Amino acid sequence: MASIKRYPTAKGDRWLVQYRTPDRRVTKRRGFRTKREAEDFAATTHVSKLRGEYVDPADGKVTVGELGPGWLGRRTHLKPSSTRVEEVAWRIHVEPRWGNVKLTALRHSAVQSWVAEMTKAGSGPVTVIRAFNVLAGILDEAVRDRRLLTNPARGVKLPRKLKRPRNYLSDAQVWTLANEAAGDKGIVVLVLAYCGLRWGELAGLHVADVDTLRRRIHVRRNATNVGGDVIVGTPKTHELRTVPLPRFLVDLLAAECRGKSRDGILFPAAAGGYAKSPGAHTWFDGAVTRCTAAADRARAAELAAQPEQDPVTPVFPRITPHDLRHTAASLAVSAGANVKAVQKMLGHKSAAMTLDTYADLFDKDAEAVADAHDQRLAGYTLTTNAAKMQPKKEVGADKRLSISS
Image (cartoon, rainbow, N blue to C red; front, side):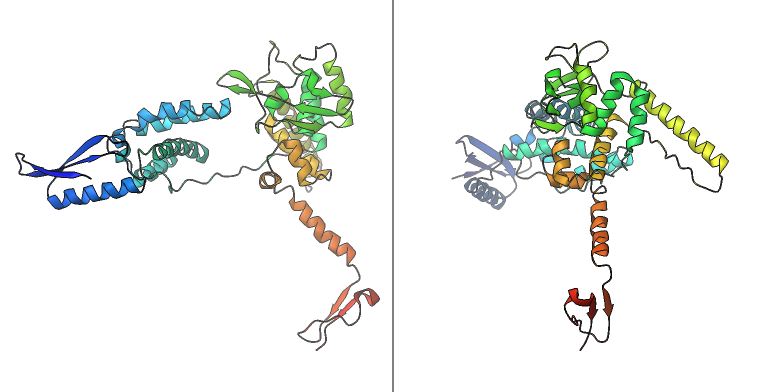
């Protein structure tokens, strides 16, 4: 049990509480103005120890800046790209604001204000959410370590992530882009657009991963650009998968494999090694620019010839290599693939994730159901004579439903 003692100070008598922590260390808390305050503190501390909720006051004096690096260092279960994102969020947003703040000084309202300030300063929802998640993760660990009783960051309102409209290419646009890219880069475009690989998965392909006999690509690794260095690891979901090859790609990939060892990289960088995702001013950007310009010229010519009609040539959108993965999903759905087939091709963890990501593509399925009803029930009519509906005779007899009382 705790002991309570009075002691003199220049401002009058004060009360001291001496007690043991759960690990049996003797500690003190002084400065209580009345004996009642000291007794209340002793009783509250005793109950918190019995409930397993005791937080050592000394632990609460640790700053966020002291805990952050250790928390980041323990995030070894994440992919290197995710680790990089968290390190940047900590360095740019979290540490400057919270590095010198003690755990006991953290307030829910202060975290909410910080989120609002980042948003007003122009940070996008993704940036704000990433920074918040780093702070909240550090504080979650502090709660588990009994440095805090609760996490003051939890319950903070975050900005909503806006879904950007996706760019899907048609078959004709895919082949136009492949021909503009030319050579092995054209094959890269086709593999991305018809197999749905992420860029890192395509960059990580070795010759041995291509089975032209069974028309399969084995996705075994992911070569990701992290801070300028290519890091090779497992695919994003940590699960290997097999993707079927369209027949038209078999001969193209067989030619690409020819002359390379089985351990050789299928699509290496110009200087050797794994290729980084092409950004601005690269072969991909150049091919897209030429396709966009050609489509714009064709549309302008059509509009000049027939000003009263909309151009037939579709707009060629500015796309990234990852948009070809979205295109692969779109083309698969258009070809009649169900959600499970699309899920397996893309390597999603669940069909629900595929539906959440590409819900707009499967809207056509609902329309197909309605169209099927129209076709199947053609010729059926409905006569209304009263409030209660009953079939006059079996529906199959004269395809007429009658309402009678």
